[in-house]
Each structure stands twice: as structure tokens, then as C-alpha cells.
Image (tube, rainbow, N blue to C red; front, top):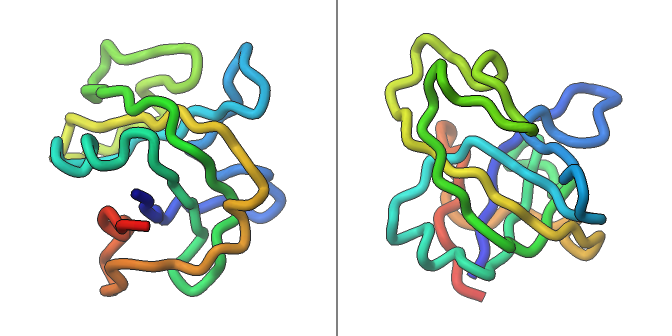
Length: 129
């Protein structure tokens, strides 16, 4: 299974603003805060995720999903990758999110968007290989 997400990055940034290198594991990254249903989360275990600046541009980053970590946003939330200030949006209505722990591989770069493509979609949905 695989999926695509819009994860904006600023000009000159190597990774998107929500993608951080793991502190101890080589080529492993933490990517958050995504909204997923329990069903999608189950399907994506051991799957692949692609990150795009927009749906019209090929993926600039991606990898094999090693773990999907549940996270509830809130003032008490802080870890070595994210702080509350990073995630805080006063308009956020969905507080239960997920962080992907992924193993980067160049073969997941340059891949076209697949799946949902309506204008407000930031998530492709789960796609079978």
C-alpha cells in the first residue's frame, strides 16, 4: 500500500517543514502531523509514503513506513522532533494526528501524484500497489 501527502517546503529547504531527520538512525525521518483514519493507518503499515510540494509536482521525498505513531496535539505535547509551537494552529479542529517514521530511499523521489486530486485534498487516500 502507498499514499501521497502535500507537505510544503520553502525555497532552499532540503525537507518539508514537517520532516525531520531521526536523531540516531541513518536515513530515517520523522514526518508529522497527519490525519488518518484507523482503517488507513492499518493499511499503511509497512507501506510507502510520498511527499509533494503540490499535486502537480513529482514527489521530492518519500520512504518506507517503519512506524505510525499516534499523537494528540496540545500544549503538553513536545518531543525531540516537534514542539507545540511547530504544530499549533488556532483553527485546528482535529487534535488526534499521526507521525510517520520512514526509511528514506531515492527511488521514492520524482513520483507523480496518484489518488484523490480535488483542490482541497492534501492526502491521496490509501492506494493499492
